[in-house]
Image (cartoon, rainbow, N blue to C red; front, side, top):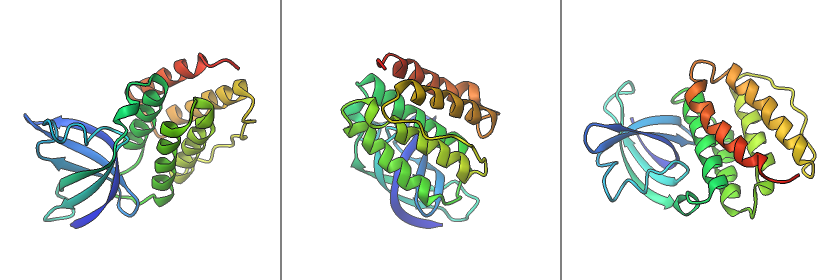
Length: 201
């Protein structure tokens, strides 16, 4: 296996002394786990922040082998990690994506939607500018995985209705794609929910 493609960093896990296993979402190859040598070092650690857009070059001798990856930064989300709401939103949607999607199944619509959502989170002046996009991404992810969720789109001006939809979709996520691992992953969503609640209606 060998391909090079733009990717979104969704998660990283330490491996050995300096390497990481990165979970990268691509349009044509889906979610791919790859070994990144030196991923915890000074040069690559800021590149492998969840939410970052990277150019990924992945190689493996066989389809079943964990590929090795070289990554170059295309767009950093680092500046928003100091902002509580954007940081919580990016942490949640990347953790959801890394945990819920099966590996190496292409979901081009999810890749495009996640790219647009993260961009909206970083560019909008407040959560009101991206909250509905986040809910739409969650519903799209559920539907792409085969879980039909009848959720009515709330009025963009009705913050209470948006929070109510957020809670209802959260229950569906915990019940279906995150049923086996909701404790760890849903904690990121709970933190985001607490921060969204502080916004006045």
